[in-house]
Image 1 (cartoon, rainbow, N blue to C red):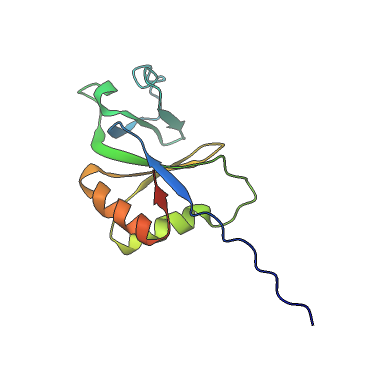
Image 2 (image 1 turned 30 degrees about the vertical axis):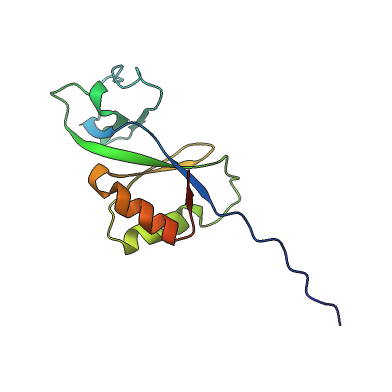
Length: 135
């Protein structure tokens, strides 16, 4: 009988917290591309048949734009392979358990989970409790 071979434990998933405070905006579907959002290093613009959603640093958002301000972002350190299963679900479970609402963005390489700034410490504690390292 062969002895079971134990694999080395995987390193805990690593997260970083982006330094900026973000806004999540909703524009009408027919709105032109919001160039004000693209004047920063981190932004996301998503157009659907129903709306245009924008995430960017809150200081970039004009006063007349409908938005929710005061979001902070956790970045899942990547890049992540497309074949991985349950990565985002694993990150969201401890946040849901702690009652932390989220707004999620995914890119080709990784995922970003935005939480309200006033819940950042609670979210970080929940993620650490879920086995995540925050750098």
